[in-house]
Image 1 (spheres, rainbow, N blue to C red):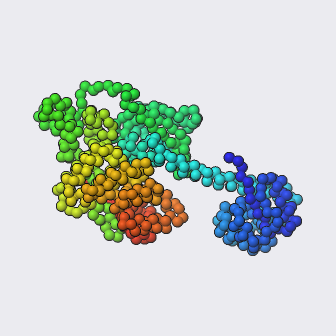
Image 2 (cartoon, rainbow, N blue to C red):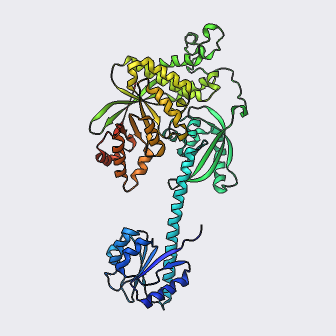
Image 3 (cartoon, helix red, strand yellow):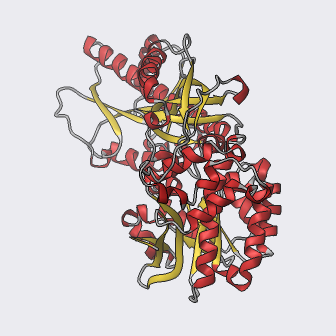
Length: 541
């Protein structure tokens, strides 16, 4: 990057003093723009409006001279450095209007070596300030562009910092079986890497930090958040996200055919951990049909369906409810529903599913298995429940992209009949633009069953607004990261208030997550709208 050219104004000097100071400045800095004629302090506002100024030299004859300068600077050029030229002997004073600005005071004596040294120091300071501001602007632009490329890329990419995932694009979430960025953030990076290869990855990361261009790829054994292992090529590159130095991690899964064959086990895992002596219990184990291959025509029932039916009535799998409420009104008739499975049982069931050919042939079927179980249990709850409660349930990216699962869900909603109106399906608003047309068709198909549609992780981004205009959701859940970024802006509260009113003007409910409830209290007053918050209490059934 070339060195910036400075633009400097000289104010309040006589014509001879002005020409002399111009010669002194040009001896130190040749590539500089200076006003050829003196400028009166009263004409400063007009001069500042014409072009940005990096520094101003002003002669202090009276204490009131610079006071006319600082208000004009604060309105037109806050980053300008003010150099007050004072006479000797003098008592250095800070101008009343100088607070919030950067200023210098040097004794104006052209025959003094101290003046020439101070002049050189001032110009170097201005150069550093201008170049730093320019570098920061370029860094922000490049960071924004890189973030857009990452979010629209088909490669699985995530940002890492001190073993934690800061951000991940949709292909990364799909690859590791996560439904959202918030979910993948809850898993430290070591949890996604085989424990035997932690030390190898640590050495690899150390090598990347010391010599980034030389070593950037490594083959690792990683696993999805559901516990399914797979082999992948991992690449690391230095990056910046939110002014934070971090690393980009690119993950490319190796095809299953190229992976080494697994060593066969002598006995399949039984999730009940029954003893050999409990033969009677073994005979009534509901998973016997899953563990044993079907040999007769009567036993050819899909083993995944058998396992689903068994888990629907098992106490280790329950539904977890999180109620929503409105500030000043209390709990509303909207409840967020998720599966509640003990981690040990979750791992055992996943290990069992991996041994089923219907699932092992396609790793995406593992996540779809839990989606089917959630909707089956929720459908059974709606059949039994006589209340008018609205249940919010997330549709994963893998479920939206699977035609068979969408058709299965439509059949389930048709069986619910009028009860389907009590379902609100949540869809991630940060979908890639190339998937919008397919997603719109899927939502139209689901809407025919009578259910409601809501958008999760909603913001003022292009994809969110485009998707909202396409599908017309009944509600939107604002994105946490976008709200945190908006809080840091000076006019963030006003922008959010206008944005919420605009969305509500279209008949859409706006819901804010509870994580930033306390820090966003004043936004509720600005909007006075349907800000719904997730209740911290959790109930299971």
